[in-house]
Amino acid sequence: MSSLFPALDAGSERPALRFGDRSLTYGELRAVAGSLAARLDGAGRVAVWATPTLETAVAVVAALLAGVPAVPLNPKTGERELTHIVTDSGPALVLAAADAELPPALASLPRTDIPTGVPADGSGDRGGAGVPPRAEPASPADPALVVYTSGTTGPPKGAVLSRRAVAATLDALEDAWGWTSDDVLVHALPLFHVHGLILGVLGPLRRGGSVRHLGRFTTGGVARELADGGTMLFGVPTMYHRVAEALADEPQLAKALAGARLLVSGSAALPVHDHERIAALTGRRVIERYGMTETLMNTSVRADDVEPRTGSVGVPLPGVDLRLVEEDGTEITAYDGETVGEIQVRGPNLFTEYLNRPDATAAAFDGTWFRTGDMAVRDADGSVRIVGRKATDLIKSGGYKIGAGEIENALLDHPGVREAAVTGEPDADLGERIVAWVVPADPGAPPSGQELADHVAAQLAPHKRPRVVRYLEVLPRNDMGKILKRALRG
Ligand code: MCA
Ligand code: AMP
Image 1 (cartoon, rainbow, N blue to C red):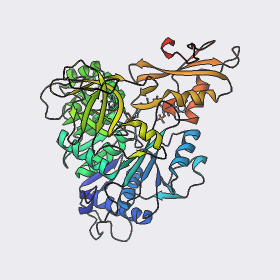
Image 2: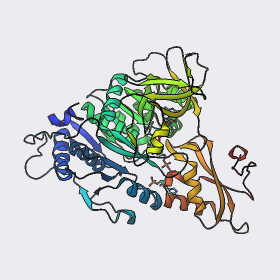
Image 3: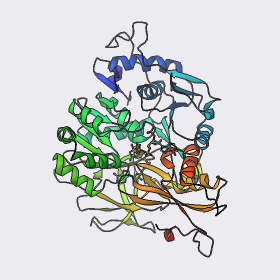
Image 4: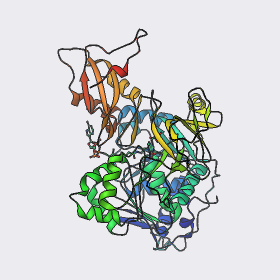
């Protein structure tokens, strides 16, 4: 793997990135990201203020060209979580769009504005002629990105993802999806997670194709871009649910989806009802792939699969070993569609470690196998169906993974809260919604649900805020004092 982005080395007038009315060709991206990369050489880790804009894509590409690991930051992250991420990852500087306002938690970091205009030295004509391709100094085992992800307890951990892992996962998807330089990917995913950033931006760039990012998700935006040359759509189930809801009233949307080459859903399970509504109204089947921040992509339904695969996440990707394991560690050999076990994986797609957390890294592996915590069955043809999750304290809401423990800790920091427990409840739109069970410090004057939601949003992130708050006089506990979450029901 000499380069993560062969098409960027070549430079051309082909479109690479489009965000709203701003775009860059491969030649322009080479010039802009190349000049930023020259300034980052040897910088150590760099944080990227990952707004859903052209700047974020340029900054991450520049960091990769410079061989400097990038730490994408959710620009809506609250104070407590941002302070943790910055302290833990220790970036040398933060890259941000020139017009971005940075919060106090980043005040101590030097800031570099991300350019998006081609340098004025003549190196950036549309084809980028005259700019020598940059040698990427890093080796495949070197870190490309550190992506923060929630666990059941404690603050988020930084998953260190190597250049090899990024390349391996994207090349495996090329095979599974017939992904080529002719593909124009449309999406509106956030750019601080694997789905939106690695698959959704680095994916098209590695293929020499292009990406059109909508800035924010709307069904109208999806319809417009797919009708105007988009060939692929990536989304989380909440987005496909909203598409399914809108189809009856938006004939242009159905037509645009019908014309796409590939509709891909991931990050959480797409409910059968939404699969079926989309298939019925567009004639197209959404395919699912299954991955994790720590493993990148593990399985996918193949684009050339002729069978409808509703409810399946497909077969292991090339290079990925996957096994199912019983509670006692015994490997399940049956491909019977009913024996449930934990998915464990190994392959070049796996993360290297959790940053500064050798304990957590060691606990995540069973020998060379990574324990995903996802429970599944395998069908006779090797395809995998996910049936649940080992940890009840992990919630998937809108495709975001959220640990109950981090929300409980934030709630307990509120002076009006004496005790708190957090659970996930089924939600047609979000998959699961976060429910906070609160024993108020003063039963006569409990803090309002809005106040607690705002508190969690300000400390952690808006997507971690409770959508429902229920008040109790005491939390149900067992003899050992452990909260009985199963006894908490609406
Ligand atoms: C509401 N808002 C608030 C508050 N209440 N802000 C501060 N304080 C409050 N109390 C704001 C929100 O910030 C947001 O602002 C707006 O109100 C609406 O927010 P919300 O209702 O939460 O969400 P939504 O706009 O309805 O978003 C649904 C969504 C989103 C678009 C589907 O959940 C999403 O983008 N999900 C993608 C998750 C993802 O990419 N996961 C990948 C990780 P504003 O309007 O300004 O936005 S998993 C992964 O990477 C693995 C590898 C995999 O397999 O893919
Ligand atoms: P994250 O840690 O945020 O990267 O989320 C990874 C988790 O998302 C996995 O462990 C799964 O539980 C879930 N996930 C991802 N893709 C799918 C899918 N297609 N179907 C069901 N669950 C999924």
